[in-house]
Length: 157
Image (cartoon, rainbow, N blue to C red):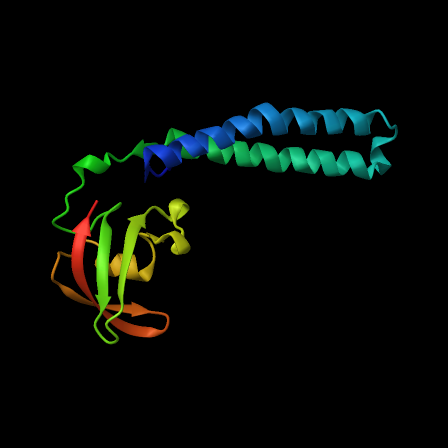
């Protein structure tokens, strides 16, 4: 069964551009490589042909997965996000209770996560511990390094 996944409009457009690149540019390049290798003679001992056919198989698999992903993608209207509790695409300002460090994260789908950019996956331990919580709450979250307590200072979109 195909799983519906939510994306921002920008990220979904990037996926569509990637699919177009694979179909319009990469697929013809691999087809040309196969034709060139086939012209070199005996296919049973032709390593170039084998490599090109394998590359074609991998490309077609990637195209199929991307098409499936796009077909089951939904755009999340960020203007309708409830900021009273933490949800997907919420921007959360947190304070580590133990050391006082303040950090800001945006909760995004796994495919959009970028820790350096302050975007954490909703499947990460911290995000899972924050989902559904409200401003002012202090949550205790199990992370690989142990338990951390975070105070939710602010929720925005």
